[in-house]
Image 1 (cartoon, rainbow, N blue to C red):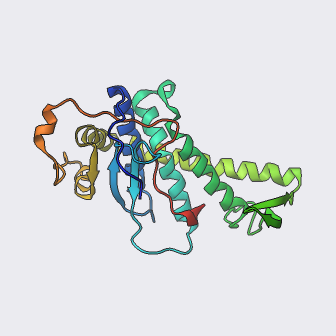
Image 2: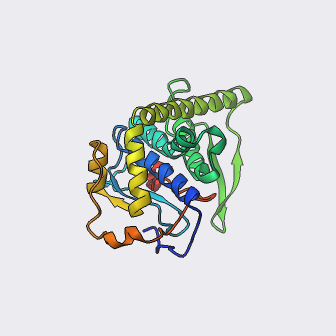
Image 3: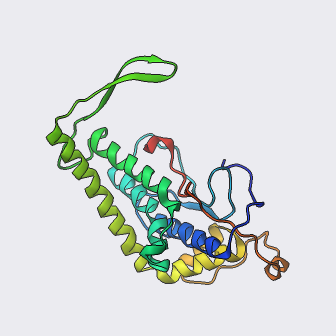
Length: 240
């Protein structure tokens, strides 16, 4: 789904370590918040445009999403950035979370303006695209809200983002031991699956993956990293 591995991309050990903590942050938060898809795999091997991936595997088809579930998605998207900040400090936070921030903001905006999930603004739609479709694009978009309402929408979006950002920080602050365990496992194995994730969440040093060749541990590791395109959770299109 994510494309072929790009093992030819070689980056510094420092960048590889940053990526490991970033992806571990996504995974731990995703496994802690309610109603989130289970984590299937975490890797710091670049695939496609993603330079590190925390992959969540839905247990069943879903056609609608609860407010609780959507807030869990937002919280998980910020797990990577917060992990970077907690481990390396605010001044070391990278651009790797840019796509995570974009997606979290999109989910929050849809919750407020399309899905009626804001307690303050109520079950109303605050934007609507109209006009003929030409070459696959909407021609016009009319402004449907006053400046006062637009300000209220922005405040509600900010409130959603800040509340879930804070929740992600609290989760990772209380799980620093697991964050270190997972990051070190990713640095060593590059890809970990459900068995390793269960060990880590139980506070245990994870067993090697089934296909792990222990002789590789004596060779210089292949480094990979996240760049401006973040490798956050794979979010089903229906949540946008």
